[in-house]
Image 1 (cartoon, helix red, strand yellow):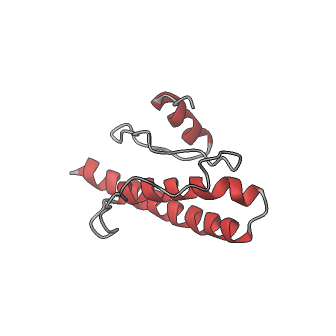
Image 2: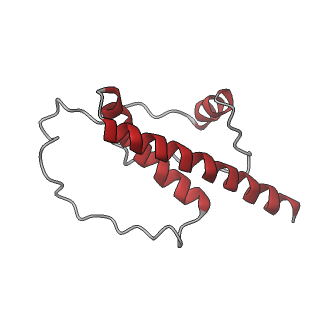
Length: 114
């Protein structure tokens, strides 16, 4: 899977009417693995130890947003296949992401004024 450049990601966000200030760097999520139902590894259990993630109270707004975007990515393809639960999770994730984007922008504006 080819990784997009930061400029490509910013262009996509701008075309989606989302503005990310230049002070914020976009870090690609290298651990994202696209869903592939035809893969023989799909049904195998995870062999690596789970990563301990900080609770949402310990994480920054931007970190929370990245986590939600990662979760949204897992529900996109199943929602195309008609999974109602995935569609509902996707809707909730998008709503949560919109709120966090607004909070991140206000946080950046506050820090820019200081």
